Amino acid sequence: MRRAERNVREADRGHREKIAAIQKELEQEKSLRDAAARVGGRSIIDTSFMMDVGETVVVGTSRVAGDKALIALLTAVAHAGTLTVGRDWREGSG
Image (cartoon, rainbow, N blue to C red; front, side):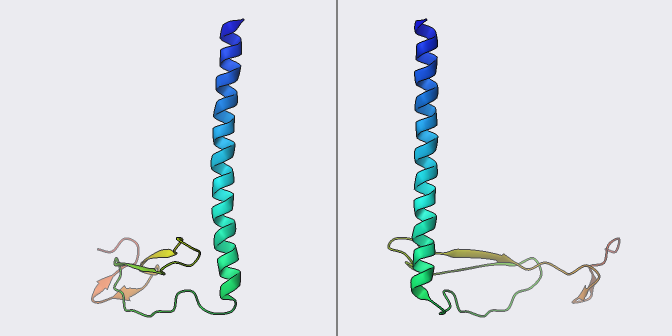
């Protein structure tokens, strides 16, 4: 019987840890939503840049909600059937 009780306690502890992690994640999401609401209709990130196919650009903010910030990774990909700088990106061409 002791083994079964120990297994139940360990499972209960695992569930409590998962619940705590989910609650923390929900609190963080709420904090970001609240910050976005405070910003109102203003842009959070307002920038422009040029990219070539295959490049990745990182844009972000500093402190939107306390110690929270937003970061976006943008990667340029070719549209199917487009031609770029002398290279045909259509399927089957190389």
